[in-house]
Amino acid sequence: MICKDCGKMVLPKDGHIIDGEFYCNDCTVQCSDCGEYILKDDAIKTHDGDLICESCNDNDYFTCEDCGEIYPCDDSHWIEDKEKCVCDNCLDNYYECEACHK
Image 1 (cartoon, rainbow, N blue to C red):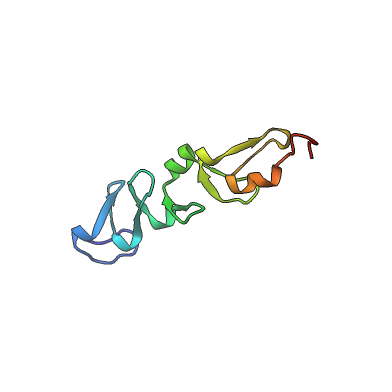
Image 2: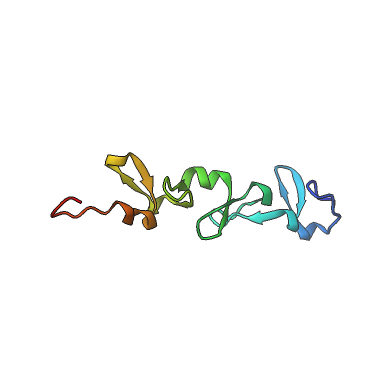
C-alpha cells in the first residue's frame, strides 16, 4: 500500500487507515490518551512528552496560562483574583499565606 502522506510503499500491516486513507507507521502515532491513530503532524505534545489527538486535547486537557504547557484537566487550578488557569507546577507562584495574605 502507498502512504498518502509520504508516498512510501509498505505492507498493510505497517500502517493504519485514518479517515479512509492509508498512512505508514512512520507518518502516524497512537494517541496516548484514547489510543486512536493520528498523523504525527496533527499530534499535540503534552508537558510530559506524550502525544495526543486534537479531540482529547479539546476535551481532557488544558494549556497552562503561565508556562504554556499542556496538562490533563485534573491538574488545573483556577486562580480567582488573576482569572487564569494554571498547572500544579505554576500554582506555587500564587501561594498566599493564610495569616498575612501575602
